[in-house]
Image 1 (cartoon, one colour):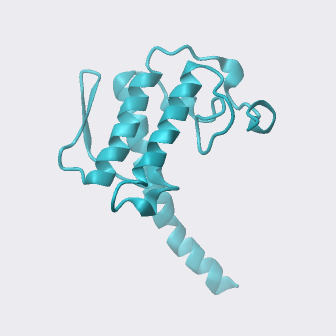
Image 2: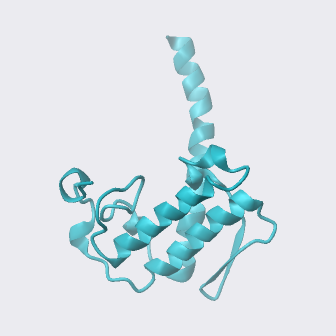
Length: 146
């Protein structure tokens, strides 16, 4: 048991390091478009902002997240990207930010380019949308029925 625990402890930092860095790109894009905004405010919002999603979006902001989820779903349909169908948010890519403008790098491979574009479009979509505090940490099992 100790050996297994040691292996888990050895490999988990690698998984943990991969996921936050890729997700961090999306957060950085949001901050680029909306300086001073904490991108975590959008996590666990409505029925679609955060991992997973179901039901009818609660408002325009939640609809941005639904579109973002659907965009990620399309990444897995690109040739060579099928392994990322369920987890496109781990794809790391390059982008730049200048004057509230996000540009995905031309050097990104097709999977990276598609994932970057999904995040870029969502970051712009969030900008200016009303934020309803009542939709933060919404109980999706009650309010987001399929």
